[in-house]
Length: 253
Ligand code: CMX
Image (cartoon, rainbow, N blue to C red):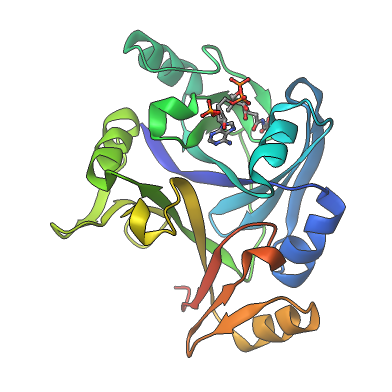
């Protein structure tokens, strides 16, 4: 049913402040920005390889994203899967009794979109999008790799995502971790909530970069809080709008 991760949504207080980190420091090129008044957000899509990062600033405290910020603070908000026909997917999900927010597609920043209710996907807000024809992605030095989802029952969560979206299984090692997605591309990793600071839902974002030293130099210049490893780094959530962000070195083919 779905063919890739279209984008990962991040709720932020201010788009202009968030640009300083995600666009200027990480180097993700801005694809487009628009007010989606019906959704109560000003939203921006930034290229991150074959997927994108969507920054969401609420237009009011009463909007869905405004309520999210009041309750949880800035951070990972939703995942959006790309699909060829969001209308027929929503019809099929509704026929199966899956709880939906949108039973019909509507226009969003990512094209024709529709949201499932978080209770359909183990507490994760999932969006489906059919992009407009001709959507292109700018080259980005840092690319989306993986979303980590915390769950008390990671195997059950993985089964739900496979069942609802036909997500391929990348690796199941019989242990407590389960990986879904596309080999060499975007993946979702389900982990026991106990391994994710007790958190359920979207808990961390992993990205890759071909060279870490120029990135580290930009992060240090921006005074981001970092944990540095030999071929990887972690940005503390306080420096990345509430997102637990891990970046590792990767040679793009
Ligand atoms: N992820 C997981 N759970 C979420 C959530 C999120 N992003 N946002 C809200 N919830 C949870 C709330 O915590 C709450 O949980 P409890 O019942 O346990 O307290 C529950 O969902 C209900 O949330 P609510 O906001 O109080 O109530 P609503 O039913 O009115 O709305 C939701 C729920 C998720 C549909 C809505 O808040 C939302 O986020 N809609 C999508 C808005 C959005 O992202 N728009 C961007 C569009 C950009 C574009 O067009 O591309």
